[in-house]
Image: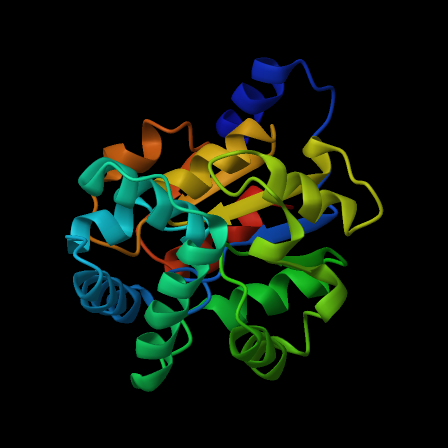
Length: 239
């Protein structure tokens, strides 16, 4: 792991790697929720004449939902729709998602958070979602490690992932940390791209069906097969 950190520091010309916060994506990282999201995306978009595959759902994960919809409408129907129309379509996706069985907490994540908290490192969440029920669940499940002031949602930024804005916002919520003072944990290509664009040390965890190359090609500094494996390896990353 020290080699990956050395490469990161050399890449940006930073002098030290001194993590004071870990910024987690939510879906596919904290919760095994992407299968539900994939189904909800496909069912909801079909109602509006938009074809969205499971691969599309995973490949666009992490972006603001309204941005994904506007892009797909433009590509498939040749229309430019307003944020308001896109929001109405996204509300239907959210309705279907919330009618589904609640997704389980990802194995290994609470153990990992416990280690991070014991090191005196802060924990934040940076998600492309924004529904209040999801935020409430985050606080219920991870309230020992997380508070609402350190949750960044789609409504905190005008540009979602893969732009760096969500993770830059996450840094600000910890008092304005520098990039070398944080770690991003992501499972989605767009999320990895956002973390890298923010110049934060970015760990990819491939909890979905996409090939590892989809994450590595976006610049992930480290790659793990699941959250439990990351938890087991944590002390070799942050001593």
